[in-house]
Length: 403
Image (cartoon, rainbow, N blue to C red):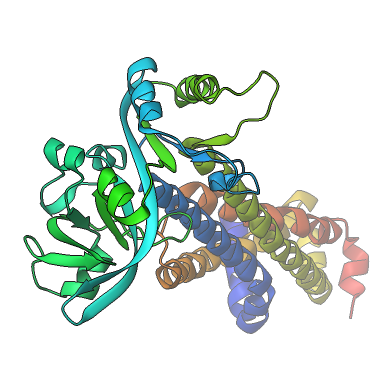
């Protein structure tokens, strides 16, 4: 019975190909829009997570002042950290894998006739470990270079390309403002961070080198702490805050003059926002499916009117009302299913092109594909039921009299 109804449905669709194509257009657009929007949104979420992970694994960042990234009005008045704070974190907090102090300044990097405005970071030999940042070539700072504040540096890929092009910079010297320093290492490519910063536009020098020869002070502006695998970053953060409050002599009940940022929390916040936006875009696109369902119901009502005599004939020769109901319902579902299949194909193709254009990963989600197809079929059932029921309830005698 079902197969006969399906064959009749296919025959009617072939008989009115143009009308059927226009009928399913709303379903096609709806399914394609949902799949495209959701796939782009999930790709953007994956990109944000990957970019933030580039900053380091299990990383906590400690900044002066309050606010995101240590900003806010209190930053300038908040005292800097000291190297003793760094040592206290290393010795007194369990679960810490590595700790790296850091101070930054902007300067002009010069080699020969080439120059480039960049950021110089003064830090320790733990910096690369905390940031999960391997060297492309060369070596890390030695203990003696760190103690003496030697004029040595490691270059990010952007600085290397701007100053040296394809030339190997290892062993050569560059000027950072008035300081001449030897290049001992080349950092591997990191790319953009989740905050839009080019992480490769950097020169890394020993902390004492920056303090004594460039900044003229002994300040530590921020501290990066990497927790061991399996250790809760929430616990490490709580221990950090307690230790720094003690060392900075902050009274009970008074506000912190520092800010500890857990990158897992940042990742979670960005991911949640991205998922909400993706769901919103998907819901807006799904409205097109409703519009497509209305189109199917409209054309099925027209079909019932056109085929009234045919329905009357079938009922007069012994067909049951449920047979007529099934025939028109299968026809509506078939139209919706065709629309769903075409929409899935177009949606995945559009998503592939869009993710390539936006430079985000293409994340294939079979769940959303199945859901979109099931929803399109459900639209066919819901909006096709009323015309099918109307056809099944026709009086055979009145139907045969219909002109």
